[in-house]
Image (cartoon, rainbow, N blue to C red):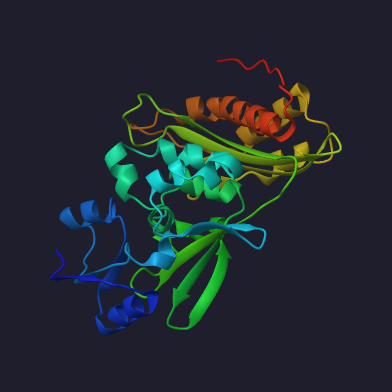
Length: 296
């Protein structure tokens, strides 16, 4: 277990603490990290708490983007009016995370840095096109969230030297809609069997942009570009949604899991969740309900 617990009041102070203490690591919510430490899966000498740094708690609209601090909790994201109105997929994903206790402590940044492919808010952030800003000894760097994953549990953010300061999500504007769907065997289970987030934009009656993310069907949240491409340039309708959902199902490669169910079942249910999410997103984008017929 760590021998020292430090509270940083600024990102500069946090980086200085990390640099001065080899083996130190950033902690914000710590919902996963603390468990790993108790089970001795990680060796950390010092924890540097960044949860009280004001710039890491920001939720604001600025210069055509929505900015979310890395230490924003799931509960804060789910409750924020700006998120509920402009990024409903993220609000729904944040509300779906674990239990109320976890949502009140766990953070958006931690959900990404922990690099678990099925993390609800990470899936939504990928679908929304979020870009992460990471601060380290060499300065700032920016990277799309989907590119931060090196494998299950392995992130390109070095929590011993760097801080994920915030996410930037571009506002698409008029005619956009998003949604998040999750399948779990019971409400209290923290691990989803499958989840999906989508974002679409409709202009002049045709879909002009689309993003579809599904998980856990790969070592990272899987951005299904082929399925999204089916939607672009055509009028949203049941047939097009069905084709996109079928393409997402074909691309999905879920594995058998004792906790999440068989890979075959989750592959089949991929089409159901994607269809439902797209239908809801297109309704938000156009105000027009699309009737779909999906086998349960």
